[in-house]
Length: 371
Image (cartoon, rainbow, N blue to C red; front, side, top):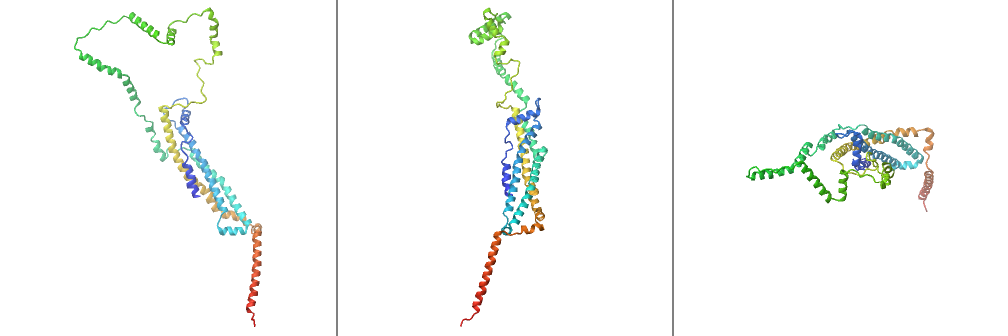
């Protein structure tokens, strides 16, 4: 039993990983379900409770398996008792069968009670997630440090603005040095072109770019500027086929104003920084609380088995045997020896009688004097 408690059951619980069967998307889905349609600023506690209960529930099956192993071990103990008891039991086989039956029935009656108690131990852990546990409170206090970013978001914004202004700042020293190095008086600025000249130059540049660009770019640019061409009489049939009604029938593409369908299978995507941090926090809390519950169950389940099964059978075995065996109408039936033992006893009695007679004859021969 000690080997089952400390080796088999203990190693089985140690082999269960806190995050087994739990992916990043499962954690993220639990967080989204807990927040609802509104995005949450902080990690919701409900998602942690749902996920940690799901992992704690996996400890119930090994605990019930431990009860079965202890029950089987006690049945083997009943079948293989001491040598002295075995010799007495072989003499009265019916009594031995009755004793084994009474003990087996007692073990069988106590098995459901033990299973219920073990299930209650796991249910107690699932009923209330104690986030104020002394061992868990230390790890929960580290959550703000996990959520803290590498730098202040406002400093990141300021840094981005400084980087955006970097080319202008790099050009300013050159301009200042150029202005400082020139000892000439203030130069006369060239005359600014008029607005009509600017428009003409812009149109000229755009036409030059359009000529050098690909035909697709040119057609796109022209289609944005020029009005649509009038429909020719010979293209009435083509224009009829291009009507919205015809497009809706032929083309499977939906209108632009409709949202696309939600895909059945979401392709794996890369998590954002906030989602990754939320998942890391939930994983850290699940590991910490799972280790606490596993330690508690590893200590409570053997105690429950010893109290409800082993010690109960040991304390009530004598009274149970007296209740079922100490009856006058069953005494003669239970104390009947086996046929094999009766035959051996008869053979032994006949042998003893023959040996006694032979000894008597030998003693008479010794007393006789030969002349």
